[in-house]
Image (cartoon, rainbow, N blue to C red; front, side, top):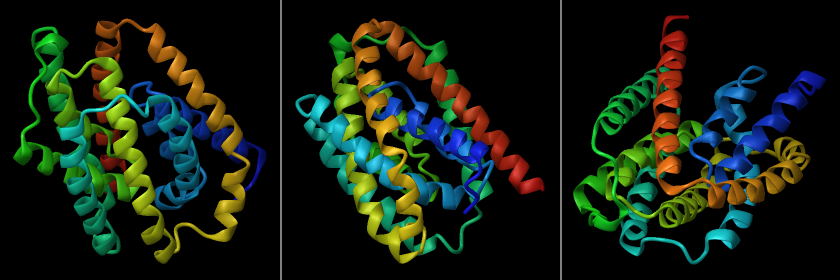
Length: 252
């Protein structure tokens, strides 16, 4: 594993992105793996960052432990588990660039639709549909296993539900904490988490933990309508980036 000064700079920024994302800032954590991919394969970067995600999850769970939608959690636990299992069984078969491109395409189309629709109203929250929820959370679990990019499919499922800001963030934190935990064992079996990678990850825990609380404070300050507008725009930009990354990997 390359451990030059530029690597450590990128790794520290990646851990900060993870912490801010776990603190509730929209889609920021999706920047983590691409940052480290400049120095290693995306799969190796995902393995290196998984312990950072898990420790950050613990701090985030403390902050948002009482804020969640129980029905969304039940649907998501089942769908995410199925997605992670599928990811583990097919990790050696899939075309990563194609999955990356398709997830980016879906996220882009959905974000454009959200940006062109009426402003959201959390006073008229929608009931989560089982079929739609299982579909998108299975995809989210699968893409989360492959490259920690479960955010776009997850948001396609949850944004139309019009959950209040705190419930949206808390539910997201709990769901992805669960996903990161169940990914750990198959990551170890596949050799993506090793003693060497964990040793490197330990140095990244402090900036990640501090960033979690910075993210929590920022979420409390940002007005709700502005927050969800940021979420949607972040989804749009990250999805465009995923499409671009997929195309570049596919062509070259």
